[in-house]
Image (cartoon, rainbow, N blue to C red):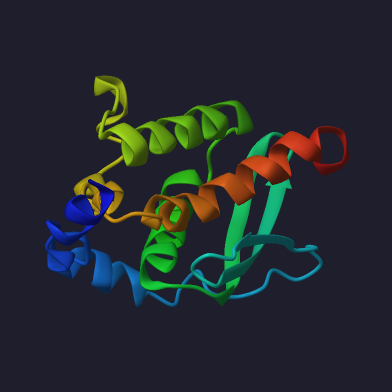
Length: 154
C-alpha cells in the first residue's frame, strides 16, 4: 500500500515553482555575530543546519541559518524566518505548532491565514514519505531552542 501511495504522487506537485524559488533565497543564510548556533539534523535526508536565534527580551530580534539542506528544508527555513522574526516567544510557539499541523494534516486555523501567506507551497509535502520531516526541521529546531533554553535566552 505504501509503495502505491509513494508512486502515485507527482513530484512536481511537491517541488512547485514557489517552493523552488523560496529555497534559493540567500537573505537568511548567514551567521549572527555573538550568537551560538543550535544544530538541527534530519539524517534520513542528510539535512544538517545551524540555527542562529537572537532575542530581545521575549521577542525574536533576528534569526538565520547555515548548513547543508535539501530544497524543502531551505524553503521552509526561509519561510519560517519571514514569519517568526519580530514575534514574541509565546506566539512563535503557537505558530510552530500550527505549521506542524499544516504539514501533517493540511489544516490551519482561520485566524492564522493572514500570517501564513503562501503556505500552499508546502501543501503537498506530506504526500512524499519522509519529506514532512524536511519541512519541519527548521521549525522544530527553533522550538527545541526555545523549549530548552527558557531561562538562559532571556
